[in-house]
Image 1 (tube, rainbow, N blue to C red):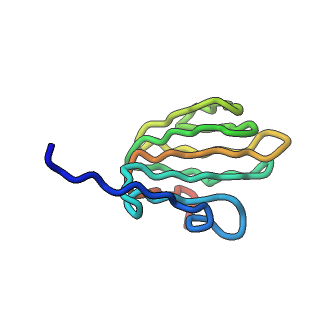
Image 2: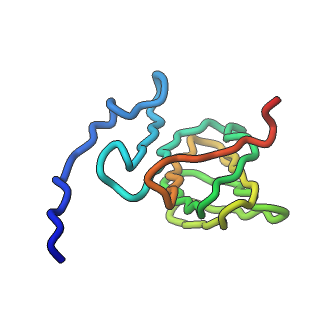
Length: 120
């Protein structure tokens, strides 16, 4: 193997923050990484609309309780749990707990590609 490795980097949370909250959007291609992720903090009842990706997604629940719907199945994941969903299958998650849900959605792609089903 004769290729030179990419330099290691630290990406500051403030550089990938979404809006004024603590949620973040990391696009791997912008930083020499082969994966991307969303680090999300949602209040009870909050979560993204139904959407899909052309690659699998893995969710890691850091804090709280999430109802994760993948296709026709709804899974309940708690702090410390990991859930997965296959490519092209519509999915969403919702904070069904009493406190903040902290969840990381890992995208098996250097870029984030998502199609929302409830958009006009």
